[in-house]
Length: 116
Length: 114
Image: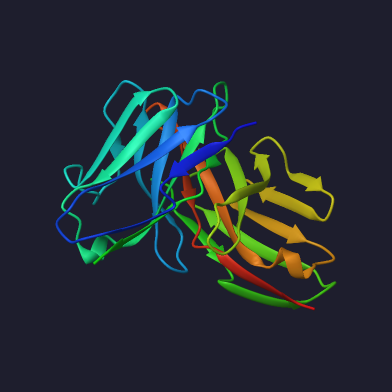
């Protein structure tokens, strides 16, 4: 149980275009999902907390207009990187919290974004 | 907010030796401390966790200890094997804004030499 699927696993896009990344909880309903960005050999930096049916809470320094988060259903949250630039290239990973779990969360497999 | 420090950044051991990774946290209100193992290009996997009402937890070769007074917790891996090689992250979870938010350490790259 507690499977989180992220799609796509890899994406290459041109500078100036937008990219959407999906995070799905396959066997449970996730009221809370987290989006992280991970630089090479670095830790997971929390970008935003996404609660179903409400606006995402962004961490300080994360541009909400740049990284659009939509958590429209209990099993799906999306992160859209708008007007992508090469410096947005990174590993983006989501995690989802099962119902009734106050603290545990399970990760998706991550998305490697390369902006050329 | 919470701040988590993790040491060492790199740990190299011989197969069969023990490995210890240490983390400190800043906010005494944090009450849940998971450890994740991340292999190259893969998702972090929860390997063990501990809550603030417990001082120690063990699962086969893996154990975690928590010292709430000192605000530090450690991961202990005994009888290490090459497949234990990975990056390990600690996290401290704090209740903030209606959600439990984890803050991660910077990670420890564990290398187990056969």
